Length: 113
Image 1 (cartoon, rainbow, N blue to C red):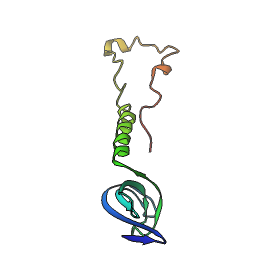
Image 2 (cartoon, helix red, strand yellow; image 1 turned 90 degrees about the horizontal axis):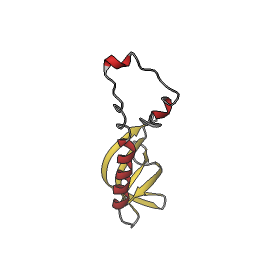
Image 3 (spheres, rainbow, N blue to C red; image 1 turned 30 degrees about the vertical axis):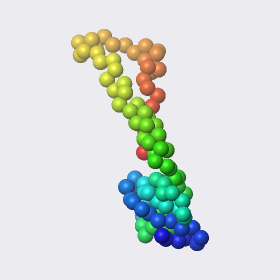
């Protein structure tokens, strides 16, 4: 178990890197045991050598499953309304947008980076 000051931690399993900053730090999802506590899924920034860490969040298995459901709802909305009001080509020439046309579009279609 690694120690940082009085803080003890052990990275039990590395699941993946979500992004890498210009300075080389990685935003990672790992299973980490902090001190003598039960291991938690941990999302935080780590230096390349894992000697330094940024602020993060620890999640239990149940919290991670709930987060998965929330993310599926958020990301699922990206695919909705992509082809909702298809108009055959012959009718397109007669199409005129009314005042409510812009309001019919979804407010969020894709989350930007």
